[in-house]
Amino acid sequence: MKNILSRQSVNEKLSNIFINRFGLDLETVANEDFDRHLLGNVFRLAPRDLVYIYMDIEREFGVSIPDEAVTSGALATINGTIDLICSQLYKIEQDAV
Image 1: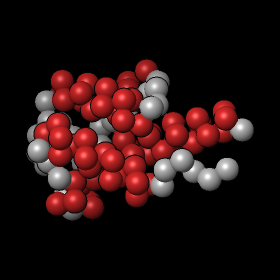
Image 2: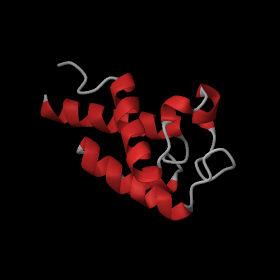
Image 3: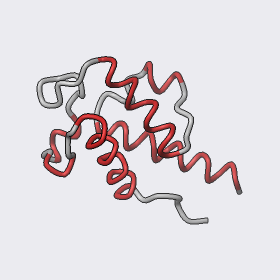
Image 4: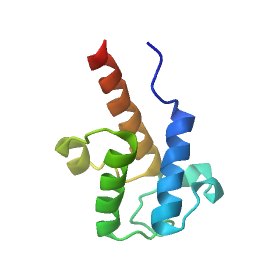
């Protein structure tokens, strides 16, 4: 069975979330900033914004994000968030087999 979404597709959908929620186009963000903390100086999001991202991801991608992923900081960076979404989609795919 083929992956439900490629990493690029996940990135594009996540970019849409950021555009709709924060007016921030990830296409304009440098690749090296994808590893910077979302609460830091580059993105300047508030802690509550991570909650919005969490809810938007679950709704948009149809995944359930485990509490451990949240407490471990998996949603702290763009790359971490993309990795988390891809792993959750992979898990759904494997459970369907």
